[in-house]
Image (tube, rainbow, N blue to C red; front, side):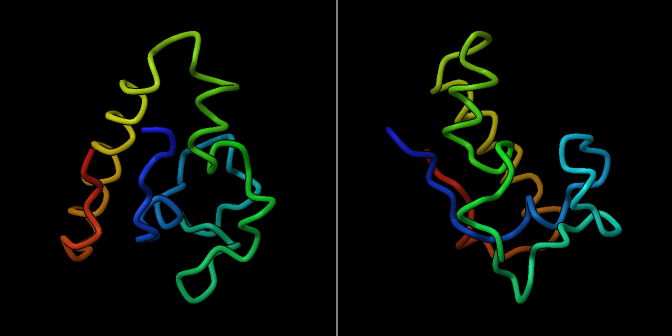
Length: 93
């Protein structure tokens, strides 16, 4: 797998409270740049929001890409469940 299979559910964008790296975008736990469930700065979004680039620049020394994808998919699916997001958005690896 060469690209993380994001399903664009918005769960991660709605759950940024406590993430120091995204503090400038935090509006009561939801990203300020999320409008009508769409990212308004998608092409210039923060590094942490770009899964594959974040892996290359921040996490590749600590785990394999497969491990990173697995952990991201697990966290994504847990957030979706917590936020009662339709199961059609679950990430399957």
